[in-house]
Length: 298
Image (cartoon, rainbow, N blue to C red; front, side):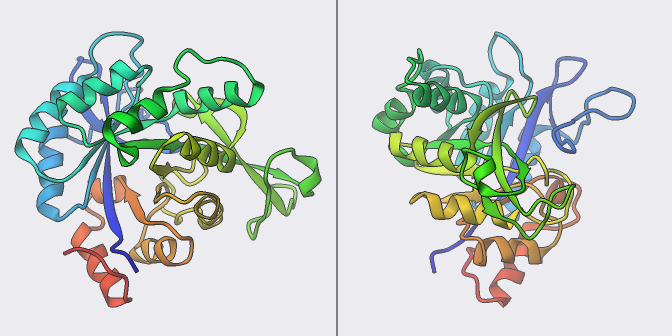
């Protein structure tokens, strides 16, 4: 078995004062009850902490959703890459090849495409042209396929029978609200605010055929719940592609990492608030995995 990776994720956005902070949401809502952005700390300081903790990689996601201007992550990545040695994956707001190049030049090892990848595949399936249809292929050519990560943000859509949906469905052990025994996984864009008629398995398959070398697989249903990863989703996508899959959303206990890495086919497991709030340390998770026979790097 190849060494499994444990990866913390830092969601970065601008707060009310225009300062870049690490935040974390519940099912993608990052604001407190008073409407202010949830502030968990300084991105550079937290990155330094996670390298000391033994993180295998670090994911930065820009969730500011600014319509224009220089991403707050660029300066952060420039500072972090000069100080730290673990691989950095950067995502959020990448709308062109030039956006990706700026991140690579700032020190990123990988870039993650989210909404753009969904839009490209939607156009591809409709036989339409997309102005940035070659961005995945271009990143793979310039930097290697391993440098192009596709971030998928799906939610479950339940049906009574497979024939009720044109998308690949699975029989689920977690029935829907009306007892439905099947579901498919609908992809979202714009930080989970809009949903398109594309499923996670098809998106993963087509984008990896275009050259992407890794899948970052989230779950809107499990985000921030601490109820465990969506094993059925991760297993289905892992079987659909031949590239590494990073499982995200739902970690709450070391056993959850063990389950997704051994039972669902994930190559890495990602968590955020669990680590940010100090409820689990990365070394604690890794030692638990080692005790269960899962190879990790200490």
